[in-house]
Length: 140
Image (cartoon, rainbow, N blue to C red):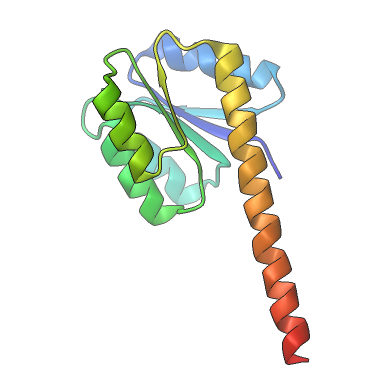
């Protein structure tokens, strides 16, 4: 499984720094300045994980999460924000966001969270493949 991450943040410095840190850690990292641009990128490129700020113009992180779940239902999404509340975090997690972090983001924690998400995604894919193989053997 690859390590392709899409980082969405309207703050240029934040998304540039995160992309550099991920690339230094062996990831392929692309960036988008808002949800609208991210959706255009997702039309042509496959990513293993999406990391997005919540507060952005045009399409915010919550709306982006909902649209991504329609396009790529198995792609984990991590939200981060400087304006977080316990209520918004709980709501996001109940809706299926993999994790919710507050800015400033601790990069070690973010990498750990991304690794967890990718491990879970890998295991889910293995389970799906094993179930398919089992079903094929039963029909033989």
